[in-house]
Image (cartoon, rainbow, N blue to C red; front, side):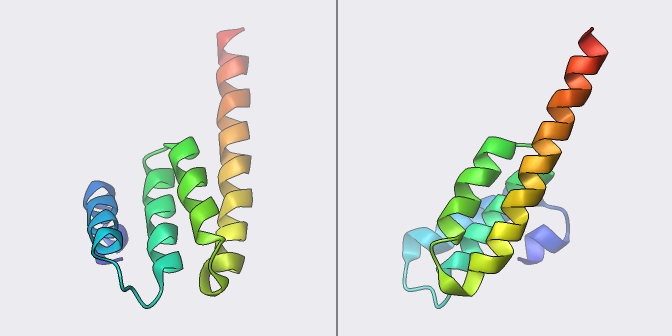
Length: 88
C-alpha cells in the first residue's frame, strides 16, 4: 500500500504479487484491491477489473471493490467514448 500511496504503481503491483505468492495473508482481499487500484492508475482497466473481481470474493474488501468496479467501468467507458469522438 505504501507504493500505491507514493504513486509507484509498478512496485505496488510487484509487492502485492509477492505477498499473494507467499500466502497466509490476514486480508488478501485488500491486496487484490491494491493491485486493482494500481492497474487503474496505469489506465490498465481490464487488468484492474480482473483484480477487483478477485477482491470482491473477500468480505473485508467486497464493498470497496464493488465501488471501484463501478468507478473503473465508468472511466473505461468515458475513455472509449472520448477516443471514439476524437477519431471521428
